[in-house]
Structure formats: C-alpha cells, structure tokens
Length: 389
Image (tube, rainbow, N blue to C red):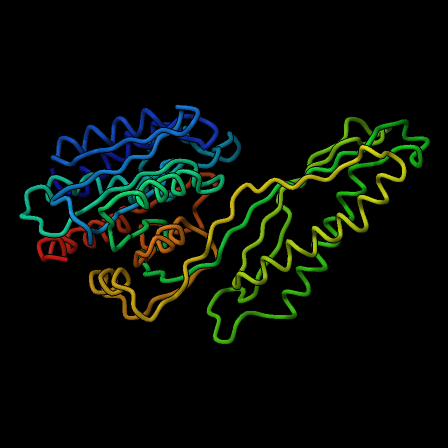
C-alpha cells in the first residue's frame, strides 16, 4: 500500500474517535500506541489526574539527547450538528478532499506520521525520532504542559520539534501567545422592578468588558514591536462567550465572561492583567459590596500559552525549510503548543497539512494534495535521522 493510501486509512480510524476535548482520548491513544509499537518504537503513556486523558511519547532509535519530535494534539473542538453535510466523525472523500472533524486540525498530520513509522524503523537511525501526541490543546494546552514537565525531569532531551498544525505546509517560525481566562461576577438577585436593591452581575460584567475594550483600543494605538510581522501586529483582546442570569425580570446574581488575549509582548499581558485587576479591586468591587458585602469577582486562568519567538538560529526551521523548498518563513496570529517546547530549550517550527481557515469549521477538510506534501516532507526527514545529531 502506498503512503497516501495508508495515511487515509489511518486518518479514517483517527476521525472515528470522537476526541472532543470534553471527552476521553484514550481509545485513540491506544490505537496509535499499537501502530507505534508495531514499528518498534518505545511508547510511554502518561495519564492526567482524571485518568480519562493521556499523552503519548514514543521513541525510535537510540536513547540519547538531540532527537527530533513530531508533535500533534489529539483533541478536537465540538462538531455540532448544524451545516455538516455528513457525520463529522466518519471520514468522507469528495473531489480530492477528506472531510471530518479534526482532518486538518490536526489528525491529518498525525495520520501521515503514523503511516511513515515503518519506513523510519527500517533505517539505521543515528538521531532519535520522537512522536508526541497530547490531550486538551484546544482548551489550554494542558497535555503539552504535562508532557513538557515530564521531559524537563529526564536526562534525555530532544533538540528539535516540528508541530504539525495546519499551515498549508508553510514554514511558521513564530506566533503570538494565547492567554485564556474566565472572569465570574457574583452579585445578589432580586425583583427586576427594584434594580437598585440587588447587584446585577451582568451589568458589572458589561462594565468589565467595556474596560477591556478600552485596553484593546490602547493596545491597537500602541501597535506592535518594530518590524512585527503578525497580522494584526498588535496585542489583541476579545470576549468569546458570556453567560448569566435566570429570567428577564430577575436581577442576575451571577455572570461569567470568557475572554482571551493574544500578546505580542509579555509586558502587554502583564499590563492588561494589572489594569483589569485594579479596575475590579478599586472600582467594581466597592460598588458591588456597598449593596451586598459578599459580592465578589473571580478570574480563573484557563491557560497562558507562550508565543513562539522568532530566533536567528533555528535548526527546526532550517530542516523543514530545506525539506519543503520554502524560501520564506512566516509568522501567524493563532497559538499552538510550540512555545512550550521552545521554553524547554528546543528549536521549534510549525508546519502541517491543511488550512487554519478550515479548522473549527463545519465540513472541516484536508486535501489529498496537502497530505501528499506532508508525506514528502516526512520522507525527506529520513536523511536527517541517519546522520548523528
């Protein structure tokens, strides 16, 4: 069976595992572990505290430092029912496109890697090859953080990581950070006809969002660092979800706001968090507690994922650029797990099949052409593996 056919066969199995972040990924991990072990890889599986999620870290070749990591997350965003023309968890091929939740984000890359493993196993590998499959990237990169902490404790440290997020096989050498939060407002209810006797959490949340948008405008005016290549080049803030209240004529005792920040500078993130904390402490809380002393505002950190910094020396970038033939490397605004690997001292690049424009969309797809380009890159990697690090 040729590589593309084997990749599609594996992708069909991967898509059939409904690994939405709220659910378990263990069945997929077990399936991937079986393929990796069949290729002779040493496989380690690490569970989260619940036991319902797991990372996989596999090694082929010598147990030494300096290896290469091919990394992908196993979770997908919810599919929903609207606008899909078929079962989101059943692979469907039409006109050279493979449809299904996770096809481009990012099970297509994982399938291509797993399809290539028997080829790698047949080589006289001098430089270790690692495969990392993580959980819960979509909700805070929790699995990658767990994995990186485990790697930090080992004596054997990889030196290069390729993160296979969908980039249309473009070489991405930098991206913004992704900081995610939920801020909850706790007031007290009452009859809507007497709003001054309660603390309406929705009204307080609206004031909080207003302050956040003022800060967003300040960041836009401030602009990005000189020479910034991001689009847009400045740090962004936005509210993604708001929930609260029980009825039209009842003062809302609770409201929660889910928001995110994509910083281009770490100092921007610190300044935003400090400004919002000050506004809550000095303005909103005193107003709330004047009516209801037990009123409160609590911000939960969902995830603070560092950006991928552009560096002058980057072996991962150089390897992948040579393999893909790309003369120019780019940066993107969306976040990945790459910054976590970079913080461990590894050189990192993001490159994978499919378009980010398809990720999280109904009828998500990856093209056979993109998978073929990915397989070509992975085949070229063989030359790197047979040379000592």
